[in-house]
Length: 300
View 1 (cartoon, rainbow, N blue to C red):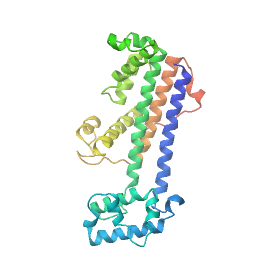
View 2 (cartoon, one colour; view 1 turned 90 degrees about the vertical axis):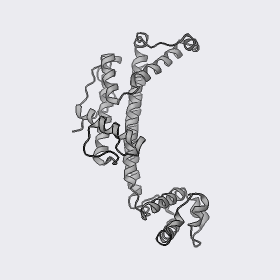
View 3 (cartoon, one colour; view 1 turned 45 degrees about the horizontal axis):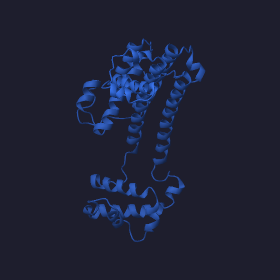
View 4 (cartoon, helix red, strand yellow; view 1 turned 135 degrees about the vertical axis):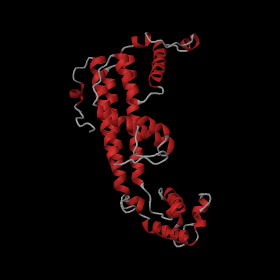
């Protein structure tokens, strides 16, 4: 594998980081003071939306039972008042999810407009940043193995004759072995453990600020609870992080500071990996100058 290919993978990673941040900023601005900041083509039926919403509020106040039950098209049809152009409203792409969100919200707290969109933007950004980071680390191990295939040859990974002979070309067998090698390297390990493994296995000196590693470790555990427990703290989270500010079962606060630290940590850690691997494996003396991108601010 050439350094140019590895460089492109790193640039794709940085692009993904910035795209995730950009999408979050645009989404926040669009949904602030909802629905007035929506694009014109989505809010063109605004008057009709508010007629539906006002009607729903009346239903909630007078007979909450009408909003309970299966959220199918027939149920939604019941809550569109007769003075609304039903076909026009229902054709708008945001109508169906909007009405269903409000119906569920109403049954929970009798407040149709109290929806915390920011929580979901932040959670999504953490999930994506950690996912991109994990993916790049996998790409890095792949790049190392393809540039130095002797690493695979000297490993103790064994495959059956049947598996080996199922590949018509040696390169295809090597690709299979590399993927197996990566799986063995990252299985059941946190990101920081995988980075330590890369340093030890390949003798690569990756200089990473401790603050960045600490922030990355916390963000990874937050990602886990977002995916597996709806953002609520579980026993594994408490054990891994040692965090004493939240109790078991409580939602972990995902705020702007955490988002900022996640962004800084992911950018700086992957930059350190890219720089060290470029120098050690590909003999590129100053890779960051070549690509013209360098992150200097660390997590405090």
